[in-house]
Structures are given as C-alpha cells and as structure tokens.
Image 1 (cartoon, helix red, strand yellow):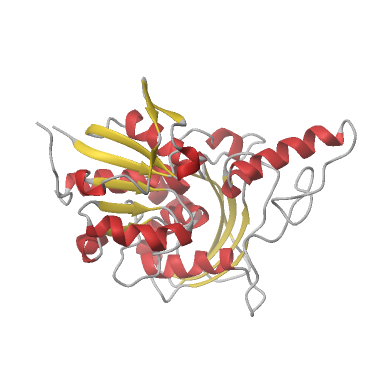
Image 2 (cartoon, rainbow, N blue to C red):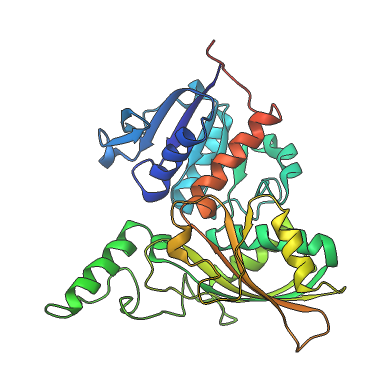
Amino acid sequence: MGYRVAVVGATGNVGREMLNILEEVNFPVDEIHAIASRKSIGVEVSFGEKILKCQDVEQFDFSKVDLVLMSVSGTFSKEWSPKIGAAGPIVIDNSSAWRMDPDVPLIVPEVNPDDVSYAHKKNIIANPNCSTAQLVVALKPLHDAAKIKRVVVATYQSVSGAGKEGMDELWDQTKGIFVLGAPPPKKFPKQIAFNVIPFIGSFQDDGYTDEEAKMWNETHKMIDPAIKLTVTCVRVPVMVGHSEAVNIEFENPLDEDEARDLLRESPGVIVVDKRDPTGYITPKESQGEFPVYVSRIRKDPTVEHGLNMWVVADNLRKGAALNAVQIAELLHERGLIKSKVVA
C-alpha cells in the first residue's frame, strides 16, 4: 500500500534528487509522476529503474495524487501551490515563497517535527533555505542544552545552490582559464572560477542580502526568535556541498566535549572532529550523503560561554531534496497524508 506522488520541477537538479531519494529510502509510492513546464514535456527522468516522461503542469490533474514535492521558483510556487493544495494533496515546497507564512509550517524533521500538526491549514509545508537547513540541525541540540544567545555565521556555498546554470558556469570558466581565458560571467555577478563572491541573492536596504536574511528569519521561526544571528553568505567554486563557519555564544556553560557528545547523539548529525590534518569533513566528502557533518568544535575564549564549529552538508540533499522527502516520511509516520491509497 502506498501513495500517489508527483514531483513538480522534475527536470532540475533538486527535482531529480527528489526522485532519486524517494527511491533510495523506499518511500511508499504506488504511482509517481514527473511534472514540469510545457517546454519540458516528454523530457525523461529516472525513478529507480523506471523512466518517467515529464507531464505538463498546466494539464495535470492534481486531485488524483496524495502528495506533491515542489522544486520550482518562488513566483511559480506562489501561483501553483495553493491551487494544488486546494485539489487535495499536501504540497512540500522547496522555494522561499511560503517559509514565513504563519499558516505554513517550516520544517526540518530533526528540529521541529511537531509543527507538521498544522500542515492542513493550507495543505502546504515549506522546506527551508539550504544553508539554514544544515545550520539548524546543528544548533537545535545545543540550544536545548545551554540556550543560544547569539550566532555568527559565514557560509561557503557551492554553485549548485544556483542551479544547473551555476554549475555550468563554474565548469566553463575553469576550463576556459587554461585555454583562451574564462568566459564572462552570466549567472554570477563576477567570475566564480578560482574566486569567491561575498554576495548571494539581492541586497536589502540594510546592506545584507535576502539570502542572509533567510537564515536568521528561518532559524527564528524553527528554533527561537530570541536568538541573535548575523550572517555573511559567500559563493565559492565548489560544485556541491555547503560549508559554514559557526560561532555560538550561550546563556549557560557548555564545553566542547559536552557539545561533541550532544551532537553525536542527535538525529541527522555525524561528528568528525579529530585534531589532525584530515580530522574534519569537507564539502567534497559530504556530496551524495544524508547527514549534516560537524567538525572543528572548539572553545571561543573571547566570550564567557562560546564555541566555534564547522558545519557541512550536501545542499542538494539535506539542504533541499532529502529534507523534503524526510518531511514526507514524517507525514506518513503520523498519518497526516490524506491518501487516495491504491491497494
């Protein structure tokens, strides 16, 4: 017995990962539909050993499915998620469109699973920003233990966070540098090959970017609005895998050994923290993996109760597709999917 599932945006990086992970974790699927825009009708994507041909979102009858995973733009989701939710299925949306809506739960299952209880208000659940997802998985057990006062984060975000165009641009520029020179940037504002760009998203009036604002707004919604959080988001020439340097100040004492023990016992986290030249995780090693990795946990001697740590995850997986599938698993476990079950 399983569900009828549709993946909207199935031809993109995250959409394809959603299909891969649904199959990897053996999510109970009886029917699977790949949905995309009209220009992608007939494009083939894989689900395990099956080949699916993309169907037109404009023509698809969403009333015949139980669950929809969305990997589309915020503008597209604003238009389509309410329509799909009104047709019956629960929508798990990966865009930024619904994250701060008070009637839409923003979920990381390891952090705030009980918030799925109000999913049926709009039949929409929001997936957080990729950089937020891995951060809150690492912060939540520490906050529960010692109450976080303030967090300072610098991100090192891979080009896959900007989609296939971002990955193609890094590849083309890297090749070009060794031949005729790097082609001019199109997706990014400056050359990304052999460079870093301290700007993601768009600038706000306060000088921060909307990517940075997402991180503190989403952390406040999922963990605690009292946490003071400041962020600098940086794009780096890495294909897949986001990294974060995280400085935390606590209300109460928490030493580095206690933090390691807490994180080792926490769901979705693997601690790799040896004080030798290879005793940490890099984004390359996180690629294709499910967990959030935490390394380089150490005391910050400049504040009374402070720690530093290094947090890494596959942004296409835990930062997007995996988290969406884990939300689907959570809904299944709690019996919250209104199933048109196929026996």
